[in-house]
Image (cartoon, rainbow, N blue to C red):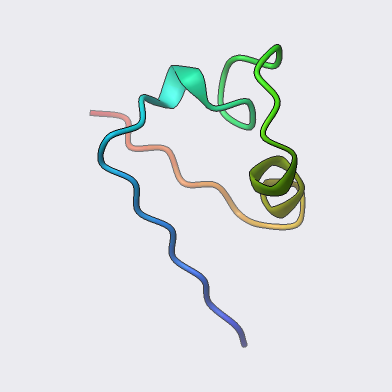
Length: 43
């Protein structure tokens, strides 16, 4: 099993295309997200 953990503390979730805003294009992060499991903290 391979695990890659990406932690970015200075980037808002609503500015990342794979989470909320589909107009924002981040091709490498979006393609990684398509093949991965995304965790969303509900707090």
